Amino acid sequence: MAIGTEFIMHNKKILLTALFLLAASGLMLHYRIHNFMVHDRINPEIVTFDGARFLSFLFPLLDVVAVTALFTSRKTCIYGYLFNGIIVIYGTVFMAHYSLAEFAARSVPPSDWFFKSTLPDIGIAWADFFTGKALYDVYLRT
Image (cartoon, rainbow, N blue to C red; front, side, top):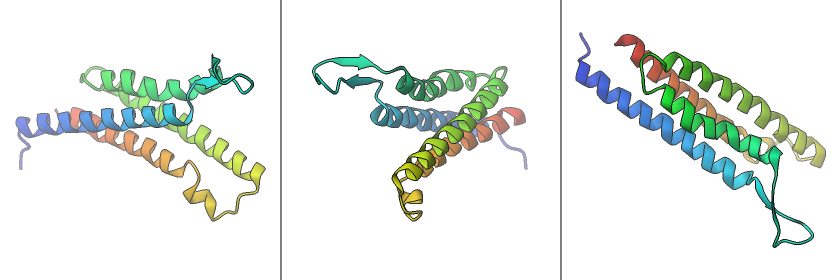
């Protein structure tokens, strides 16, 4: 059974929209948790830039802008797929490391490691990756 061009184009738009929404949701989540403009502890009226927190904001920003842009064309979708994979792997390692390090430092019981960790955030990142994989597969079929 042949897949029609109209069906493939429709799926491409849906997957690209899902990819963008997952990346944008990750960006908003990171900005809410790791806001890089922090209030001074001594004088809360003073707001300063925190470069370490900005780096955790930069990866999802690149995902929203660069990865989505790369996936809009068949010629550049391979680079979007690779870049998306790199971002997800780095994000997984960083989020798992900092979550486990914080739990070990505070002696959190292992039962809380699943529900109060970054595991759901890592799941969102991998959902973003698999959406990109599906989009890449659609490009390969056309």
